[in-house]
Amino acid sequence: MNKLMSLAVVAMALLLPRPAVGVVLLNQDQALKQMFPDPAKVTPELVVLTQAQGEAAKANLGGKWTLYDAGSKAGAVTNSDSVTFFHATKEGKKVGAAVVEVQPGKWGPVKYIVALDPAGKVTNLAVMSYVEQRGRPIATRRFLDQFIGKTGQSAITVGKDIDAVSGATISSRATAFAVKKVVALYQAVYLCGAEK
Image 1: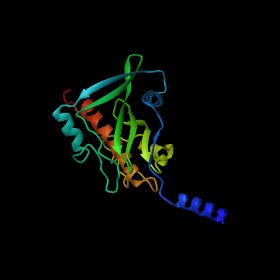
Image 2: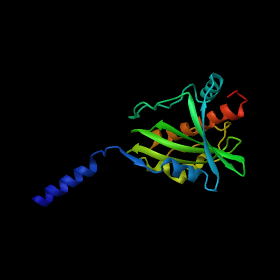
Image 3: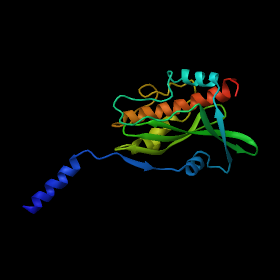
């Protein structure tokens, strides 16, 4: 009888929903090294958005800074009128920029780093941390590589030019929105001629 009880307890534990767990994949230094693997100097630049820059970026994002998807259990994500661009320079010339962005996933915040070339094209990205039950698939190269080469002219939308991870649709949408936001911010600050 004890064996049957033990098996029943194990079976119930496997069938019950697991709690969401926070997972840190990369700290900031590791993430920047992954974005810029060549020996490049990386310098942060805090940019306080002008009203024109904020409006231009927000217009490309459907008028919002954060994507709150129906069904998300994540709490509020803080937004700011400033953004830190990490500029990579090699031989005195800017070769790219990266931004750390946080968006709400299904169960909690997902932290990303997105790298762009000087023209604003996505060159690399990674998931730095997440709070999910099954969030690991959004951190795979198979999923993330879909974003490489995207620009401000790309849809960067799940169901259009991005395929969602099966069982992680909300987190897939959060990833697409994070990338789109970084591209929109870079474009508004560095490519649209808006004053700093």
